[in-house]
Image 1 (tube, one colour):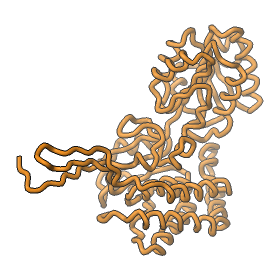
Image 2 (cartoon, one colour; image 1 turned 45 degrees about the vertical axis):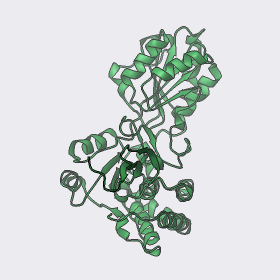
Image 3 (spheres, helix red, strand yellow; image 1 turned 90 degrees about the vertical axis):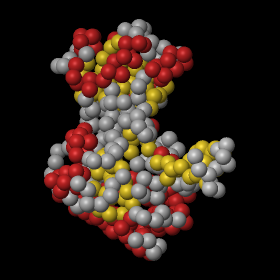
Image 4 (tube, helix red, strand yellow; image 1 turned 90 degrees about the horizontal axis):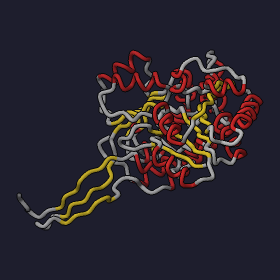
Length: 398
């Protein structure tokens, strides 16, 4: 959009959106039920992401309220310099312009990611999946109502109801300006966007997260963290897929057997590397390629390592660059692990399920980036900015 909206206008739209979501709660759930009834796929994770229930709506409302109360991320001075010729030179945060969000099956993205991009002074282009079309169109209608009631053009939030061919054509030759694209979904979606986009892309969404149980671990903590990471929500990118157990751990075999029993009680299918399979009788992995996989399912792989360095190397080789956790009571070993594992979020004695903009105090997230440019991990309001140089002179020439 050509003119930056005032922060008062942006906040008023977000606050109104929170109220409308509450007022339209019953309608939104009824419309979402139509999407759920139309969904014929067997993908359990997809179905969980598609559902809009009271808890999801509460989350949407909270994110709108939090965004409305946060400081303006635009125009924040990051650098100040007075030139020897007297010019005042400052660098300030600036809006990207137009942000396109392409996502699968998650109507809450239409609210939360859209809200973060809007608060950051951007026009929003939303391209949701066909399975959530009715829910998304209902939420976009609420966006338009909130904009209109605040005398702001409805063009600030636009829904692109495109099929795959139309989406590809738009990515390759956009019919309007697009400054940044954020794909949120599986690896196929990300690869598709990266292949066809003509502007910068922030890659978001791939997990394949690891927990390493070091020889100095508190085994109860380890068990609780692994069960939580794997079973509390299988459909999210911060869920746990891989466990590495230090063979220097006293009675590592009996601990591993007990852990497997606990996971199986939660209906998790457990596979092991050769050592774990031999020690416990669970099925062995067929190929090391499985270490690269993100499951989004009740499935986990448990393997062994003989040293901390082997754990670090294995995680860096196979993980998706999202989250990794070490369980140990040895703080020096934990710090070494955290400094050397190449992931966006590294944990000591905590579940990978916390990698989330809301949990990290950002008031929600646009995405969780596994790229290193221009921001890594959860991308909150304060990260969805570029910058601009302002130079104030009085006739200076060089």
